[in-house]
Image 1 (cartoon, helix red, strand yellow):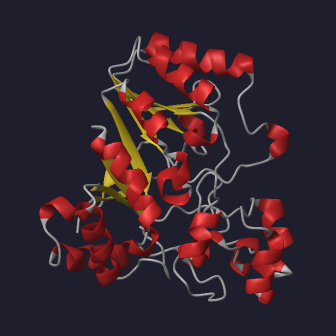
Image 2: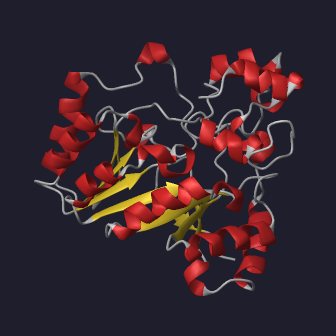
Length: 309
């Protein structure tokens, strides 16, 4: 991981912002991601995603405490059940790298970054009683937990669930996590899908390509979620290049999320009208396979809905 000293050496202007931002939400950057970005450039689209911004410390009228309505749909801790046929299971609140626009910034260590044994048993028991068709492992990042716990969870879930989906940014932010051994173990739980999170084509470095290819070559379908972010990818050409680069790597562009109104991310937000206009332009530049569904996840907990453009 990159040290705070390296961050402030590259960006002296962050010396005062960094401690306060870190106290609100951890500042953590993997070495691999750091090497892809220009940390000295405040406008670098990769650096913007991971280095703090003064705007994070300013309240905005549009801030929402629970921007996608998880709390209203959480029957037991660590479980979100918005849809009849699928359940989201949060394995941890930890990540290898923390995105500054994250909608799950409730990262207070005093509240626990991992479920207790009792909470975990209650979460799994709920899923077994609800019997959804699909379970989505999320977090935090489910790949930030130990392999023994990760695979024990898959083993238990597969007894009552037909499809497993893993939402992780690790292949992008910490690609060395995706070893041959880990991939072969994961492939035993088919049908299993991996949904990664990439916002800009420059995130797709050689080590990321290797991680993605390991998954796909093992027969594990990989899809991508992106978030529409001002200063990062709120440009039709940038989005088109990302979606085409993913498709070339056999990764299906799945969702483009409209920016959630989480506290501290106001400087990333794009209006719905801007987003619709961008997607109309993107649609003219890429084929259907490269075009994700543009979605909004509202704070009432009703679940994702497509944005028509």
